[in-house]
Image (tube, protein in one colour):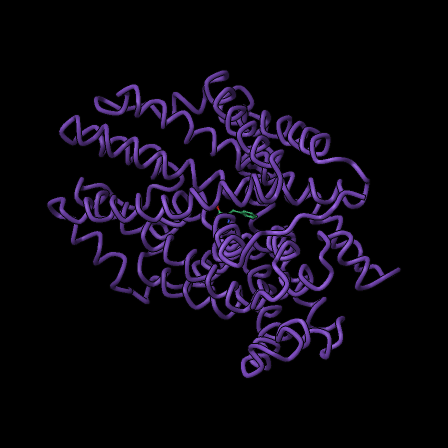
Length: 444
Ligand code: PHE
């Protein structure tokens, strides 16, 4: 068996986890969901979900990973030998593959838009650019392939030389870039309306659908339910305080989502555009806004913005690929290189279908949805919450309380005071919250 690598320090672990959490979910999905679901009211439910629903599940994954030092499949087998719980492992082999496929398509869009920004394509008339681009065959496919290959290269380099080094460079850079964009955005005339939209709640907008959307987004954004956090936690240094890394990751993820909102909404309002546009908000609306600015400002902002999205997407996609590669390494004895190639190829084939579903395959519908939308919905509304539900039930109800406490408190040396609160959330609140999301998604 290959010698198992670990992250070199606690900072490396938190940066890698935050890297996984912060991604397209924060910059692409969060702002448009805020726009579609009534602004600040959505943001408030999102914040509450992060701590009440998501943090306990984050802890559950961390506990399983760190206790066993194995990736999902092996970890569950070790903790529950011979029991049907092993099927969680299977779920966490399939979900990352599906997500990696469609996520890389959007990652590819950011590669392409970065290129467009660098070649000054976003400084003049951008009308029709986005629909034309995604419905084409080759351009999005090439961009998607570049993104996936970049992800694979980082994973090939390993946990320390790949994931750790890459996230250590990208994460601080990401924060600097997004803060820069926020500051610039706030100087635009009329931008205050965007700020007000994000901070002044209109509770009449809240209904079951908004609550479910906020919870589902909190879930996706924290990379839960498919073993990414579990796998990273299995590389945690010995005495890592898993509660602090969980809270650190949650705050970084939340902070980044809010910053992304403040980077985008003021510009949207300043340009007099309605925020509820949906998935095209970042790739369609923003380039339009850039093209309306003095051309050198539009060019610089476009480059900085799409570079930020690309880096954020890559630090997430590597965590999806790592889950599969770690599984093949541990369970099938397949080396890192071969494992990376196998998983990348499967995700590539899946991604081709997702990419083409905006163009030549647009007519192919599954339950009335395009291939891309169907996989997106299947993963974020069903598979990830299901994985999260199973993890939290496993830790809350299957593992012995003594073992959970032992791991959570680093053998009784840390976080002793908060254990009961988190344990209660894990056993009761988080499972009920997820079931509510399920029921709402079924009914709506
Ligand atoms: N959290 C990532 C994002 O916000 C997406 C992700 C989901 C990553 C699930 C890993 C696992 O973009």
